[in-house]
Amino acid sequence: MSWKRILFATWLLACWTVSALGQTLPKVKRPEDAGYSTERLGRLTKFFQGEIDKGAIPGAVLLVARSGKVVYLEALGYQDREKSIPMKPDTIFRIASMTKPVTSVAVMMLAEEGKIDLLAPVSQYLPEFKDVKVGVEKNDASTGKATLTLENVQRPMTVQDLLRHTSGLVYGPFGNSLVHQAYNQANLFDNNQTLAEFVTKLSKLPLAHQPGKVWEYGMSVDVLGRIVEVASGMPLDQFFAERITKPLGMRDTGFYLSAPQTPRVAEPQVDRATGRRPDTTTVANLTKEKQKWFSGGGGLLSTGMDYAHFCQMLLNGGELDGVRLLSPKTIAIMTSDQLPPGTLRSGFEDLAPTLEMGQSFGLGFAVRTDAGHSPLVGSAGDYFWAGAYGTYFWVDPQEKLSGVMLTQMPFPQSGPYRRAMRELVYGALTH
Image (cartoon, rainbow, N blue to C red; front, top):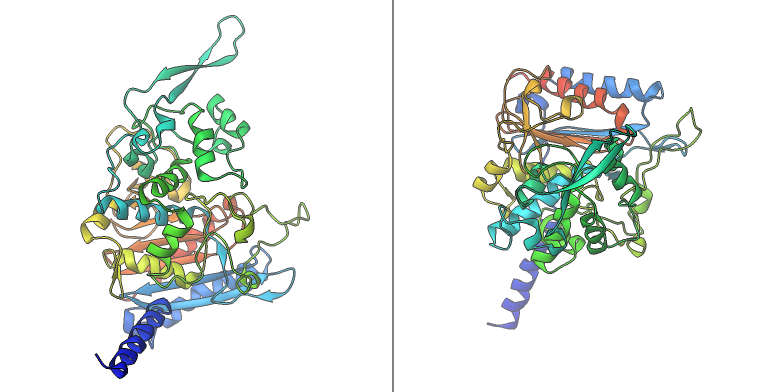
């Protein structure tokens, strides 16, 4: 091959690489071209701008895509209200538990490569969990006080249990049982620990439930993050970057930021009652130098467009712009009901994977199983999740649409905004 041909081939490869890393979803010329009403989409802007104007939320980035194209993208209000920094489309948010679907995709990628067996005991990858016990509360007849006794597991906790939150692992702040109290005392959200150190610490605590019996949201996906490290032979941040975010063109998604990215981070507004900002440091440091714990359950930062890339990959059956992460059959099983009949369930309002809400849980997401039961508009088969700092997304395969809502506010305040986002987006559909 002549030197000119070599140079030309090198140039083509460089152009392809830049294109792949810089890809973005195209935008429709008019919402009507994608079956949306421009006037009705304006209601979405009006609602959120009204909440910003009255001081309820600092700002938001809202994105709706249909059939692979962006129908609506607005940056409203403030990235930082107290500093009068306006919100921008590329503002970076702490997405908290919207990290969990990304970690679940990583697990399924390794399962497709034969490196993870979903029905294998967790102890096959993390021997620390081999002798884990279940904590059972019993009342002392003489004192009336509850005591914790330890029982053997009826069957081992599996990787599938971690993916669908039936592992028996919980979040300490989400309950008052003696097991929850033990979790709180163990300092599990320590940013100065590695994932390996976290797993060792967690494995010494009892499970709250027998594996497979109860759906309870908890630290399962952080354990999955460590399994990804063990199965892949690389740190979780490296696996995400090399295998998921860079291939999908998610340039602003990661566990930490570069110096040029830092000024783009959204901040929650000061709470008028306390005079302080809500704490957002639980699982997210912002600089690589300070980062030790890569929380697969809640540590990522991202943007609206970046997460829209991830949603579109899911909607496309595991592929985006020629980059395939998963097969369509794997996406199908991830977004199917994975909770056995008789599983005890609880949850948070519209996120609850309960029969009463017509919802269940797959491998990484809550899944809508029925057109009815839930008062919220949607489609059977759509799937979704949210984050502790006010973020939310959903994917609707029937309508070929996805929605991303990024704000920074305390989770208890975010429910009405998640629900409004859904109602207003579907309310703007014309066909």
